[in-house]
Length: 145
Image 1 (tube, rainbow, N blue to C red):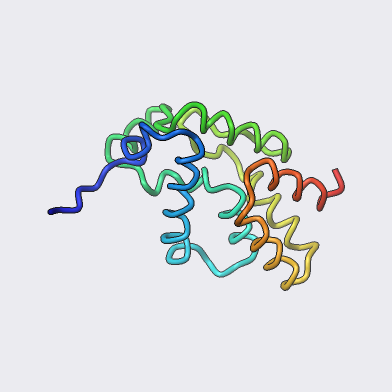
Image 2 (image 1 turned 135 degrees about the vertical axis):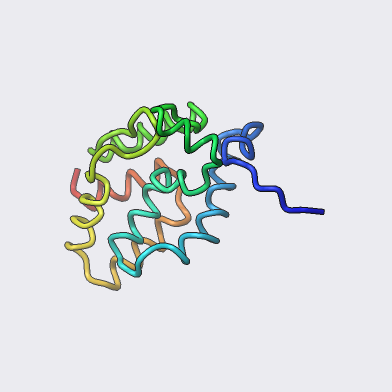
């Protein structure tokens, strides 16, 4: 039996949004520890905005679609991520499903700069187990919005 690589889109095509989130979380837990810098702002960014890392799992076809401005991600998922981004006051994803500016990482730097190291680590830990709406509420409360 061979381990055939499949695109994220293909792997999640028959999943509902909740299952896609669980699938992504499994990929995130397994992969982000190996690729992200050890920095609280980037840890927070990976926790709050995993959609900005979806391209890592693109197949060749998905990558070509993104270059053409076609988002290979499920539209319902993209809509939910864009709603979260708007509620946090940052730019929605572009047509190819990638961030178009640095507003998300700037938000994370702003949050982390106002917290002690232990508070930042605790925030990341708390957010890791929350759904999107709970994350938005926690961050907006932290930002006094």
